[in-house]
Image (cartoon, rainbow, N blue to C red):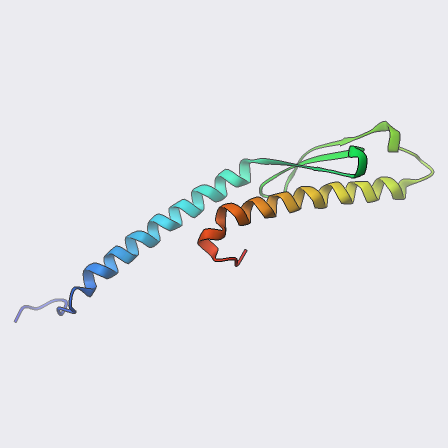
Length: 109
C-alpha cells in the first residue's frame, strides 16, 4: 500500500478543481470590483439643479450647483438638493454593483 493521501474515490481531484474555480471566481470578483470602483456615476436633484459625480467606491469626483438655487436666505433647499443628488448617485453605485457582483454574492450585497 502506498503512503501519502488515501484514495478517496477521486475526491482529491475534485477538491483541486473546486479550489481552482474558487480562485478564478475570486480574481473575477476582484477585477470587477476594481473596475466598478474606477467608474463614475452621476446623481441629480430635482430639475437637475445639483449634479454630483461619484466613483464606485463612493468618493465625490465632481459637484455642480446651479446659480438658480444659491439663495443665502434659503440654505435648506440647497442642502436638500445636495442630499438628493448624493443619495441618487450612491443608489446608482449600489445598483450597478449588485448587477455586476450579485452573481457571486447571491444577493448578499
